[in-house]
Length: 270
Ligand code: HL5
Ligand code: SIN
Ligand code: MN
Image 1 (cartoon, rainbow, N blue to C red):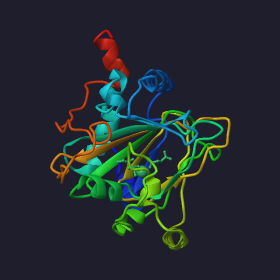
Image 2 (cartoon, rainbow, N blue to C red):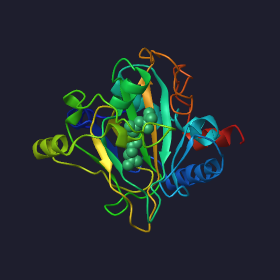
Image 3 (cartoon, rainbow, N blue to C red):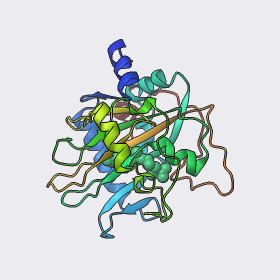
């Protein structure tokens, strides 16, 4: 369940790593059912697309749905994360970006740590994200695009736009890179968009530049993103902290489950 030397090298070099089909289809089906259930829960954790109707993102589903609470401790995910971090970790943020068919909007080019430094005064970029594909990801349905190696140059932007796109969270639009920054990085490093079947997982750094185009295809692109933070790197709030759905307060170190997340649920008879 640990990453091999080649995988570790490519994560360190590129700032991301794709592992195809890490979860099985039955497991993805269980996660999708849990997501449908969670989309029906009203509250500020549910963010709409600009049309006001379609779901753009839902935060903190692991606080409400047991499948996600177990998933974040699944050894296939947690062990590689802690291998990459070299530390114990907890989930700092959990979200599912729905990217619906025929109209899921773009996610602007950004580095995650810019948001967390500005909004939460998070001391250091000691995070690993996992992006779990809940749908097949193709060139058609708005895959996340990464700029390989862009995690090694520090933060390109440390400011937030004056007008926020959303009150509920910090949308990448508010910390987007300029066209000039983008063009110069792409000229040097190119772009890569990992694609693969549902159940594939991308491990990615909180400093790597990424973004994604709108989805004009008839296929949704639901992507679950959990951010694990080093337990010794807690936000040092100045003033009012952001809500628990966007920055989780449970900072207890996670321990891996004995089995895979669905198997664990079967064993305890859920
Ligand atoms: N929406 C996140 C937050 O913390 C920040 C973005 O992809 C992560 C930039 O509000
Ligand atoms: C993000 O960085 O949160 C958005 C990426 C995406 O869902 O395309
Ligand atoms: Mn991001």
